[in-house]
Image 1 (cartoon, helix red, strand yellow):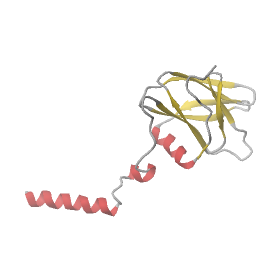
Image 2 (cartoon, helix red, strand yellow):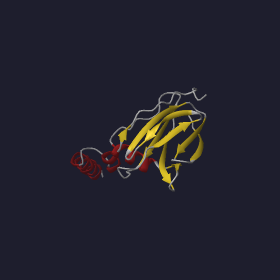
Image 3 (spheres, one colour):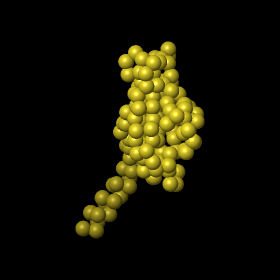
Image 4 (tube, one colour):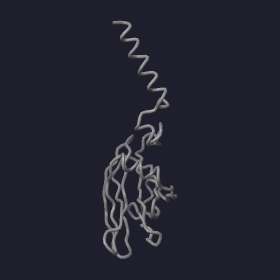
Amino acid sequence: MKKLLSAAVLALSVAACQQGGMSPYQQAYGTNFPGPKDGMAAVYLVRAAAPPDAPPIPISEGRQAVGSLTGSSWMRLDAPPNPLDLRAYGSQDSTELIITVAAGETYFLIAEPAGATNAKLMTISWDEGRRLVRQGQQVPSNYYPGNNN
């Protein structure tokens, strides 16, 4: 029995070495993905690929402009555990999304055009969010918690 157990452990060790010691998940997303800062929530706002002539989608939190997302871009907000009043703007209309974030949690939201004159924000899965972050370009954020006057 001990020989069988030893053989199984050895076979698993050899298989792990052949894969570089990384699971398929780690190979796809890397061994570490930046999580939230202490006492904060990490909110990733992403935009998938868009045509080169597509206008950027401005994002605000409350009355504070946070930044704009162009095709294949993302920004990260480090937010305190509170409700966030986020808004995506189209050329004429905007759409609001209110989410409550918890300290230590990570959230992914996608900004997309909604019709010819509006834009929307929607929550997406971790898998989809991480994939878009890995494929996209980070853009700066003007978000400073507690400064949404």
